[in-house]
Image (tube, rainbow, N blue to C red; front, side):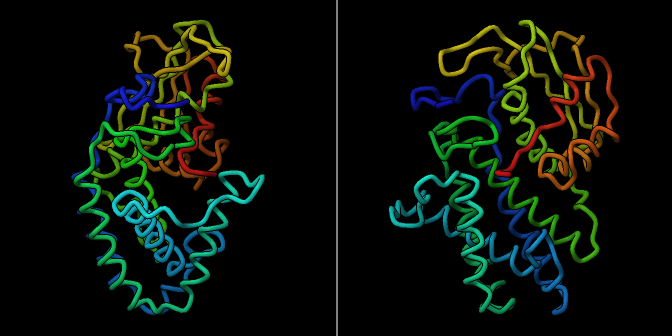
Length: 293
């Protein structure tokens, strides 16, 4: 699905635009405080399968450099997919290449570089035009995407990686609801794309509710809209909530964000969820994933 530059807010099925710009500075400050508080041995703890805390911090730095080069500096060079290489394979490959190259960099040097480049990235995002077309967001099914979604997507990545570092060293998820509210709202923009293969009568609604101070409710509605390239049912977050969804899924915030980032599998989330109505629709909604996976 493409976003046309003349559409100021992006396709309506993504839901109301959101503004994450003010959250980049506190998120960067929180990451730096976390990294500066690590003991030497904690840098070698596994943060995600195959990557240590140091690897994950290097990956965040690579993302910052990539964003600045591409969008601030309009730098055209860089890696490209190999013939026949999928987006997912390409991204995983270049991420690993970057992390491997940075294995020679000490944690102290990594902290100082990330502080510098991360601050520049924060200033870039604070200045963006939210209505402008930007990088595609594959898990939402749109390319190019409006900048409001693309920038919020980057905030979710920074926030998620910080939680993974916290967990690796025995700290819980940051309880501050300000960023998590934005993270969950962004993640739920994947629900219509998640349901894209689910046929349902027009007007059928699936509601995902996340409990707690950072939570909320998102209702996806089936429409009759179809095109030659997108046959069948289309789902949208733009329709008003009818009040009686065909399926309702209730999740706690910790389960919701871990599900969307595949920290837990859909079956685990379903076991923790409160489900009302059509079980098959609820199970389809719990396949939501809001990362390149």
